[in-house]
Amino acid sequence: MENTTEMAGVHLSAKQKLLVFSLVLLTFVTGTSEFVIVGLLSRIASSLEVTISSAGALVSGFAFAVAVGTPIVVVLVSRYPAYPLMLGCMSIFIAGNITSALSSSYFWLLGARVVTAVVCGLMQTIAMTVASEAIPASKRGLVVSLVFSGFTIASILGVPLGTWIGQTGGWNMAFWFTAGLGFISFAMLSLTVPRNLKGTPSSLKNQFGLLAHARMITAFFAPALSLAATYAVYTYITPILERELLIPARYTSLILLLFGAASIISTLLAGKIAAHDGLRKLRFIFLLQAIVLVSLYFTLHSTVLGLITIFLIGLAIYLFNVTFQLYLIDLAGEYSPSAKVFAASLFPVSVNFGIAVGAAIGGLIATNFGLPYTGWMGGLLALAAAFLTFISVQMQKKKS
Image (tube, rainbow, N blue to C red):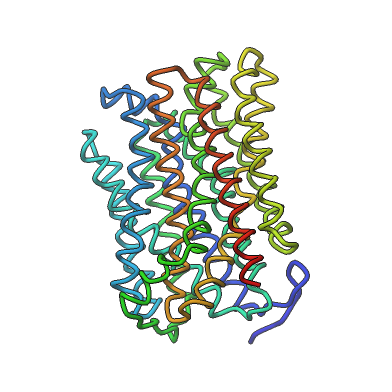
């Protein structure tokens, strides 16, 4: 029997709450799988006898695979029901993580990460569309925020725990851990995802046609640049902590935990920002993000100041997520309603594109100039995000 109780100021049925929990668990599991490797880069580089920038490609390669593969796969499968798609993707996810755990060479690990990445992007897209269809429209903003919170919970719990497991039992054990999480998520999804949610047939022209609109383009690249700014630094947080701040490796998990706590606050603030003309506010938030990132260069001489700066970077990491996810879906509703699933895929694509670009550029900067200079690059990318958001606001004014 469905009981209706209050959750976060709104009413959701028991079945809806369980569905939301399953979707949050899904983003938690996929987020942990994607980011757990950040805390183990040094160990993986040493074990597989590759450079730290090559190990960083395991992060950027994952993100590039999501960015490139997700929209292509979404176009091919969006016509099919959500239930079998979700379970099929989770099965591939589990297999990919098991393969990663068994990998003994860099290229096997990279290949397994790429395959896992594509299904992660697809599952994240399906999660957003399931939430928007199975939950009343009046509660959409809340649910999107909650589903996104899975990524921040991954930062505060999954990544530090996976890092600790990888440090104590070997980096391969971190992937056995994420595979185990995948089995739990599979069971929850099989019980909660509605089986009556049909696909949304749409022509390739209608779906890719969304990208012909300037407002869609700026809404795609602004959040990508903001996250690229963060990941130019965050991808190399372990060597920054150990080599620049001279913090012993045993404290890495604790610091990642604190970074995750900051990102939880960031996610909570994102919902509030989105509810009150978020696009306008983000212009100035991205400027503040740029200042914080550049300040890292000047604070690495002090352990306390360096850690405070890293905490502030975490505080800014997800402030844009709800605003731009809903903005992209709303724009799709305006330009091509049948392409909303494709539009929903654009945000995780944007996010992972940003992660990929940030990790790749950060690697080049760290290798050629030094780890402290990653903050300068992050600041430039955040300024670019602020500029594109300013353009988005101006185009929105003209449209209205």
